[in-house]
Image (tube, rainbow, N blue to C red; front, side):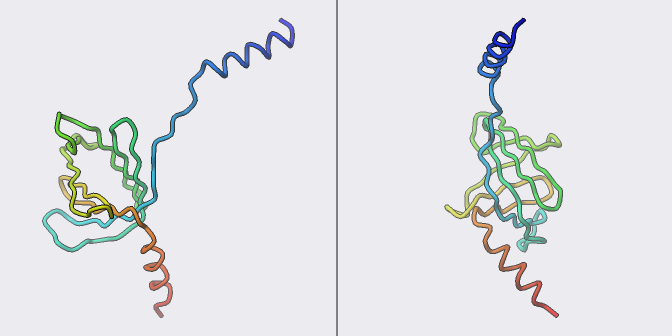
Length: 125
């Protein structure tokens, strides 16, 4: 095989192999509420991603939630442990609520308040 043929084959392979598809993702703020509590236990940075109807929440504390859509009603999911999870409104255009077996996540699209919290914490003696 000559060089021209190898280049042509390489070019054809590059065209025929699908490129990686990236999920839509956004840096966010996650307020974590233990089940049944009305005060958050922690406020942390997180990343929200959505791909082909599945939702991924990657928290800065190392916990990753993988939610696979289930059933015919929107907002019903199965989490990575096989338990039911639910997406709910309630934050308007500021974010979305996810209800899990042992906790709820109030996920806010605007994570800028996290930098304010870091600054205030750093200023304490």
